[in-house]
Image 1 (spheres, rainbow, N blue to C red):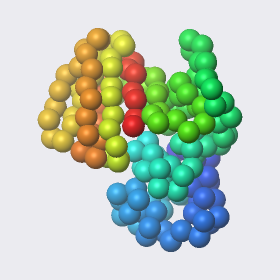
Image 2 (image 1 turned 60 degrees about the vertical axis):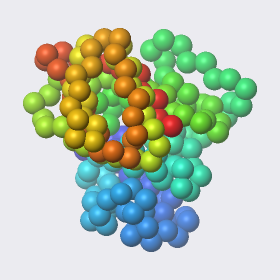
Image 3 (image 1 turned 30 degrees about the vertical axis):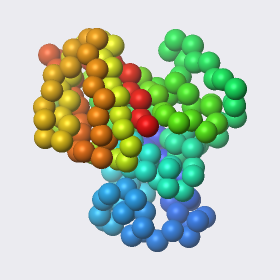
Length: 182
């Protein structure tokens, strides 16, 4: 795993230790098994954004603090210039660029997500809340609750994020989309 995932893993372990949260409770919060959660904390397994979102909401910790290790400070507005959002590459095929990392108390987490083409199968995850995806460039296969949908540039989908969902780039081209997680 890359260094950014290991850093997130360390922050998760630190949060759990600080708040004295049992591993089983964190696993339940992430909708996963205890063993899989421990793989998240070890940095050996990528941590789905949905699991981080669930932890963020349950324990009142900013998602950006878990992802990037810094607390937001802006309360009136937060400007993100083109290409300047706080970015991280979670796995080689996925890059997340936060568009509101510095705004305190966000009601939603907006990201520009870039997915490189890959032969890997779809990795499904789920989390509390809702999600909105709007394709900016390329085409992607988006699976939601067992329904497979092809989204092209300009297409969007709003869905219940508790349903298992995942995506992959199509046509051997990079796809870029706006994702809002509520």
